Image (cartoon, rainbow, N blue to C red; front, side, top):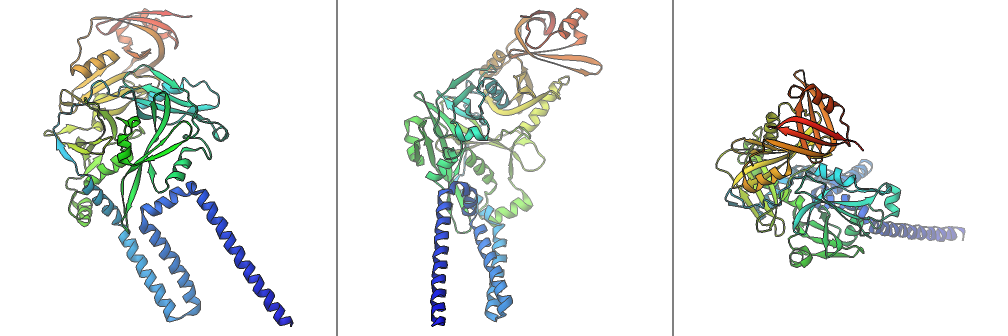
Length: 543
């Protein structure tokens, strides 16, 4: 009787243990499902690169069978372990080719057609204000103790591109308790601080935590996607967050990215998930960039996989480098290609400039991706052209006395003026507190044109010619910054007055003017007269 009772108790304990295990797994599964946005990176990574998941499964299985075979020492377990090991080695070998398979398939889907080199790009919507300066202008207007600005991004407002910044809670605790306060828009086609603030509280947005976070809501709605940059849409007085996203076509060992659709979140946190064809018909999204910016970059990089098979592409890229290109990103500026440009007919494009492979810095081609439909075109040039990296070098060469330890040349943007390609380069203080000069470098002739006044920049953009300068000139405004440096034994000064810059040196000034210049302080209201580009009088007013 005691034996039977113990057997019954043992059976009861086993069933209880099994019930507890099942219950624990169900709770764990529920938690994983509820908090799935936090697991998004891991799961999407395994989905995007399925061969990685296969390798992990085989590795675990091989380890388990290896341990079992060590104790059982049966031939069957040893054979299974060996077979799993061989399969693991084969999959690791195959994994080296999955990138080529993906890019070859991507190239076949997005094969550009060539167009003429004379692009009809709008001359009224060219970016003048660089991102760093736009951020400085915007952040200087935030007067709320518990708020700051999110990362800048380009968006479209009233048909024109502008810099946009979400007004977001500052700090971890505020991010949990507070909502995004609205958006700041900074005009990009002027060097002035042209700022518009829209303070509509957002129920869902970036930088908010936890359950009102933008990514949390997106991944709850649509999980196996890669969201693009969330751009602000200001439509009929309301703020919308527009997020194009990338989805993936499954191919057993690899996946191929595609434009999956567009997610729209309104101020109240309502979410719409639109297919590409639905987004293109939505009146709110007319002329808005819908094709994912990150996918555009992937497609341009896939243009290196132009041969018939992925094995031929691998051999070409590893050995021959025939027709191989490289995307051009000027280092340490945090503003990668593609660039958003607008044509004369109002159509928006993602523009990407590429160089030949290797040490060459000439311009190989420019790719244009329609920012709405994703239609791709290519521009090639008959004559060798200078790329953006070397264009910055030409600007520095044209300003040999400039103090480049306190200033930097940023954002070489391609601009077509009367069919000629120029690189627009902004010269700004390291603090980003203004625009000192705007330079244009002719990609063919290497000619450099440098402007300090916004009006001269716009005249040059509209006409392609330099406006004749006046012999006498008066610059009046608030002194924003004063920089000095010594070169060749001579002291040089750079004055930033409102949005204009004056450069001068001690050898061009009288002792009286040098003294007046030395006592100038930031915040002074000054009036400076120039004759033939040289300072002839300095007057200062202090409050």
